[in-house]
Length: 255
Image 1 (cartoon, rainbow, N blue to C red):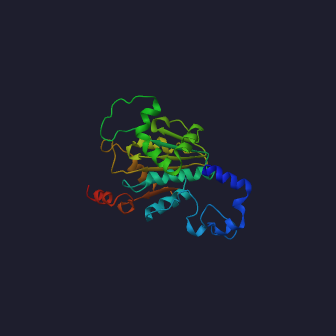
Image 2: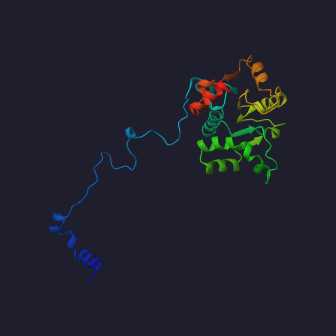
Image 3: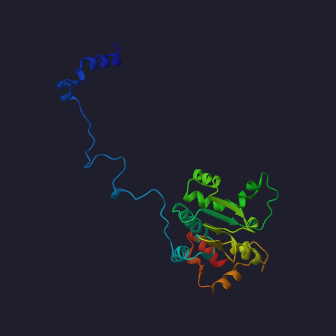
């Protein structure tokens, strides 16, 4: 008789339930919990929530986050690595999830960084994908890529180049204009006047890292003019606000 058959026979005859067997058997018991067992550790053993908490890592980032909460138009100027784009997109996602806005509009100039990449195959979305990749990265860090695609399919998240913004009025939206140093004065003036009712716009860029010809970028001029408007916040980040590798801050200081 096989071992499996013997066990089945013992189960049928109730041998395994006999007191002698239970006395000799080693029973491993789970520790009892007050209030019942839970698959999750107690609140003292884990950080609350699974979503990433948006926290500033410098005084400049704290000022930027506060400005976004209190102003409908914010210009964030600073060197690379200060978290301008990430914080702007994160605040946009936060506003959408909280129901404060009905959609997110992300825009970026399709300007090549000092080199010609030639013809790109595919439709318009495929051609623009390399330029808009930083915005996708920031979105996917706050939301799953599956949810990002679902929101884009529903029209709740729109990613478009600067050239497609003319003539539009963006109501009930959170607009992020990234890499604004690659926009001319006329382009930025056009973008800023797209702001509609119940909307927030954040314009980010580094005036010292423009891919346009010298004197063509309009970001510095626009920022200086708008600083005089009380309802508009102009936040200037510095090298001390860089949150990338420490070498980035060191390089920015000497380059």
